[in-house]
Image (tube, rainbow, N blue to C red; front, side, top):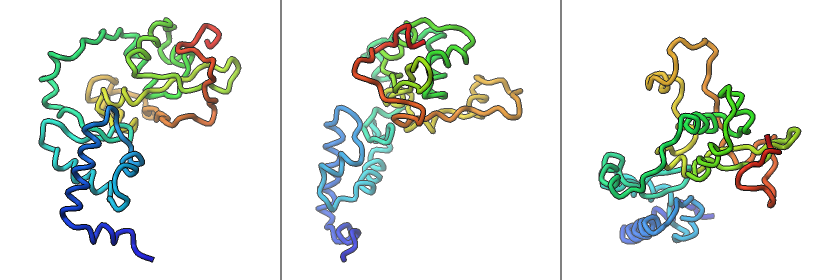
Length: 223
């Protein structure tokens, strides 16, 4: 049986350059990030996708656009140090309220989480509109329903959240030391204090999928 790596080894430089051009064209034309499975389905069978992506990423490392991963998917994005050039053309977004920012942070770190759990962590109730604003921004989504009495809706973040904040995955959320350095946490924390580890999977063990009749926003019966 032949080694799959033999195809890569025997590939001519011109064939490799052509595959690199094909990959570049796919990523430029895509309207959303592409995963490895999609890229493999569009390129020749003998293409080493991971190696081609690494090579293309290196080519664009110092250019005006960079090849980045968002939630395990690949896309081209304006280099971070040049984003100011596009601010003039960007649509001005509504400034989030303190309640919305705190809610977004709780969802990001504690997902999957319910509205009641968000209120318990914040210590105050949140208006229905706060969650609506975050969902309209495309940063949080309804994940499922918790397997507890009342079957409350659970919330989590989206790929758009990762993209907006320049995160490859939820594992890249700031940790304790980074939050301290930014002045967002008191330096005198209890010794057993830890930042929660979010669950970005589709559904947790205690969640059921949303049903067709579920609304975009939860109604009062979900509280």
